[in-house]
Length: 510
Image 1 (cartoon, rainbow, N blue to C red):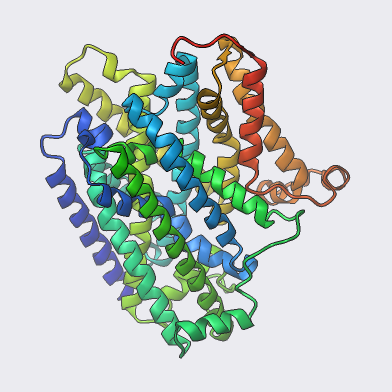
Image 2 (image 1 turned 90 degrees about the vertical axis):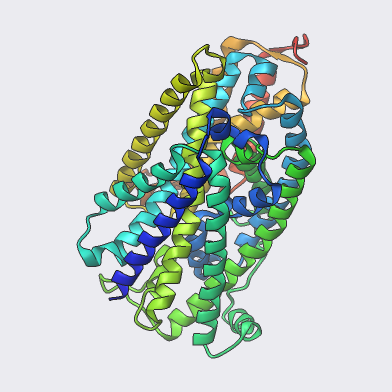
């Protein structure tokens, strides 16, 4: 009965999104799809980007991680906040000055067309894997806790959800998702607050009492002072800052929405408001994680296989358990979907935009608007198919600890963007074009080897094989484990490689 109500709620939610898409996509053209005609309301963009920045992974993984790492994730959040200031006052002025549609056009203007293509390649790779990892996590949760009751197979759930996302982004692009993201962020935040209130009430306490209980259970540790640990506070804060600079400021999906705002000043206000709200929202997610673990310790909830719910499964297992009313389950599922869709619909739109602009040069062709639209729609459809195939790949791997994977993968693949943009902004040197790819691949290869050697246990668990690197790891790193600093090291290596293979002669565009 509860599953049936949830299914009806999901269907109604999709109908609402499709209605919004139909309304906003009327008379939409390529300019509407790519950058919303540069006329988006900054307040709507700021609010909608909260949902894009958090995603379904944050919704289930951050609370699930509290039992293992306490509130140490908040160190990373503080770094995120610092990174947003860099994006607002260093990168956004550059993008507005150059009047960019794709931010990777800057690399072409500064270092040549090959650099433009390389930047787009790393974005497409990173965003495709990151977005599909998030999509897989939410589809798998819905599969286990909702769709399985109706014997709906996983593959069909994934296909239907992607088709629905495709339908409401197909025509309007950015113009549509600015509105749908606002709607979905509202659903996510409302769901977060309602779920938190319900669990605190179930513990027969209030928020102050919940904090005290969490402290007594040693779940509120903020700082890690052991420099060898991946959670060491300086690693987390600096790593978080550079993650934001790259995954927001150098990411076409995030910047596509920002540069759709009419003026630089409004876009900066958007960024500052969003950064402040994100700090508070992440704090609520951590508090929710603490009360969920406290409740689980007192009233254990088991999964279908008889094991204790933990990690990414903890929040959905409790919200959809018989201990709570069906209403909370509906709130949770709608909030989860609301957290997922801004990161997936935005990714589909931005990947389509980047491929059309950066790879196909669609804006420079002489084709009419109708021909451009047909080409754009074909690209959009192809990326939807790629998303589906990637979800099936994650299903095969069956990794439920998605948040750590996303951070590691971002550290490896976004590093070249950090190095390229830093080199382009802060130097006047001209890179020898034939060495661009070697310089940009050097960083990812080296940081992957660093991470593998410093933490072979992680890779052994994921690959289910023994690599025999433990003794080598101990002798080389003496217990030091790489964390979010991977992305910073990666960027530095790429920057150094670009510097090594460059000349002092100024570029024509500098």
